[in-house]
Length: 205
Image 1: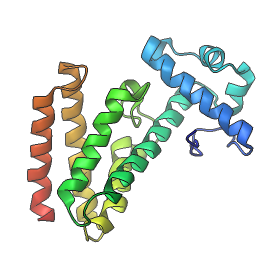
Image 2: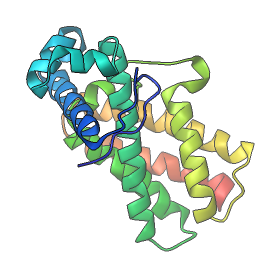
Image 3: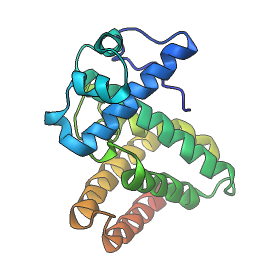
């Protein structure tokens, strides 16, 4: 069972294992219901019923469904970063194209398989937080920190800006790919990969 990060939206962070497992069930139920009824149809009561917990347990962690969606988005991001790290550990150090493929491929895998991801992903579909903490900015920051050492670069402002432009561009194109095909239009995904290679190559080659 994956641990749940201490999301900023939590009213109270879980301390005991039993409490952490209950929070995981709540977020799993939230993700399933998002796929079934959408964000507008989501309710804290429905989540409690699906998770098999008292409604008070939901309110112990979250004041409303927006906070639940935020916590789910943060859990998605932590899982995504974990998956990217696993890919990088199996790739040749310094190969930025392999790193970019890992970043894109793991995102596509979550789009296709992670419950609730199409509505929440990392918070882009239901924006949360202050402007400086917008999801794509958070992702660009995390990727800059994660990939800088791998590709032998200093995590400076130029690298962060390049990743932010890449993330924003890829996000828009991947959304288009999944609007055209529920599994992601392969031609659009190919064009996205080529665009990222051409753009990042100016800085990283």
